[in-house]
Amino acid sequence: MAAHNEINGIPSHMSKWLMTDLLRNQWGFKGFYVSDWLDIERINTLHTTAKDMKEASYLSVAAGMDMHMHGPFFTDAIIESVKEGTLSINRVNEACHKILTAKFNLGLFENRFVDLEKKEELLFTEEHKTTALESARKGIVLLKNNGILPLQKTTSKKKIFVTGPNANNQSILGDWHAAQPDENVITIYEGIKTLGETKGYAVTFFDSGENIRKIQSSKIQEAAEKAKNADYAIVVVGDNSMRYKWKDKTAGENMGRANLDLFGKQLELVQAIEKTGTPVIIVLVNGKPISEPWLQKNIPAILESWEPGNLGGQAVAEILFGEVNPSGKLPLTVARSVGQLRMIYNHKPSAYFHKYADEKNTPLYPFGFGLSYTKYSYSTPKLSSTTFKENEVVTVTVEVTNSGKIDGEEIVQLYIRDKVSSATRPVKELKGYQRVALKAGETKTVSFTIDAEILAFYDINMTYCVEPGEFIIMTGSSSNDRDLKLTILEVTNRIEL
Image (spheres, rainbow, N blue to C red):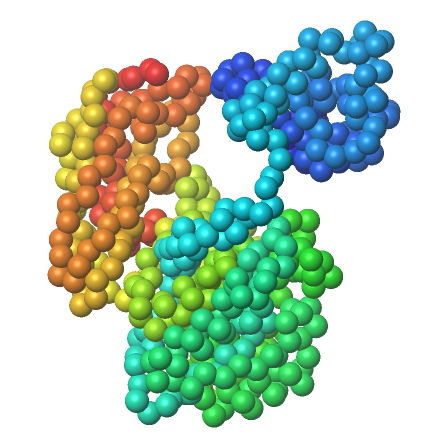
């Protein structure tokens, strides 16, 4: 699918350089292109690089577009262009060939119709549920824990109070989902209640307002009053990207944000409950980063659940109560505020060279970061050879030990840095990672391989090569310097690929 945007003044949906010269001819793309929603029309109506729909359709198809997603006038426009001789029938045949080949490979010629009687056998099966639950368990990231988690089994009927706009609805399914039957979704409150009661807790819920845009101050005060009587308050906040509640949305496709903090009065809700003295645990439900340093400074435990899917509530509860040891890592860098953007781990050396007058120049959470209920220790990485030559492969090994008392899984990460280069290179680049299961006290050796492709880049003359010199090889638990141990690999000769 082509993008909404333009590149160097040419809308992507009519860019021959992008679709044909680069992706097809140079990179060998064999599939077919489909337009995004009404974006061929927007060549005319938004970008104004075509005078009408007919010209927009011609420009897009001639550039390489194969299928139009939506709109009643596209086919008429293409037929007219072919009849006039403006557009070659061969280009149309080429597009049709790609689309029909894909349908043939999918078996749609033999099985053209869906048997609705079999939907129960094909959708939301036990295999699907297992995959969904495992994905949620492994994707959830523990951002902070001062020792409050995991919640321990109790015999004294301790009380857990659950509230927040995302605590008891289908926001955990994210954007582009239709409302699901309630029995197919375990909300976060439901997950906490079901598992919490087996652990001896009395779990209650208060609806403080599901519409993030319209949380009422009176509801905030009521929630705080109810939280006073609890031993723990679990507050589920974040964003709402539910497409079928468009006026309530704060995130998702076609819903941008000018800020990265908690939308509306959500922080006020958290602060009001925190003031009661009841220990607060935050669960974030969101499809993009939330930048709220106050939470990191003042709340004892923060769990980033993302939009964890149908069984997300079960997965969250299992982590909160220690049935599952959290192992997820951040796939991005979380800035402290929108003013820090662009905040990335693989920045150039000159980035963040000067300090902000009113903010740190370090992220709120680094790329690859994620806590566990156990601790892992790393040895210094070892190389099978400290020098690298053409056509060679160097093996990196590192010993990882679960030095805690709980079994867990760690995601071991490999980064490199080219110390001196003819064109500037990032301060570090992720080049490998492995998920490793470790029992308490167990040590395993993790191996990575480094070849020329991993070290290569486009030099000052735009030649793809490996330049001679030293590379820093780093292994550890996140991209943060303090979480990495390093060694040096020397490339003895220039290698062109």
